[in-house]
Image 1 (cartoon, rainbow, N blue to C red):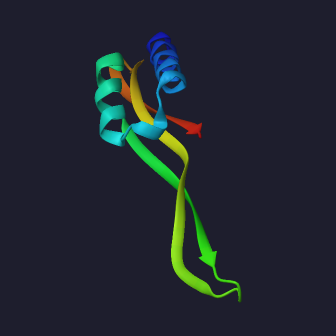
Image 2 (cartoon, one colour):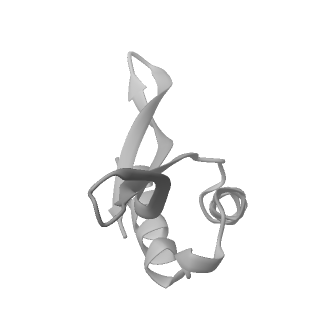
Length: 94
């Protein structure tokens, strides 16, 4: 469990300091690989808004805004004498 808390703290520190407006998912993966020693899975969640015209009709245009980022990483836990990777899902709201 100690490894989990160290990784969570490192990820929290990174996410609080990084400029998400000028960063892409690949850069986050590369940076976190250097920090926690593994490449996390990343899911970017977008909020979509449809633009309507004055008459209320759909214009076909959509605005996407990054709403949250989910990171999935692992830590090892000893179960039955074996180290088993346990996934951890962390969600960061933008």
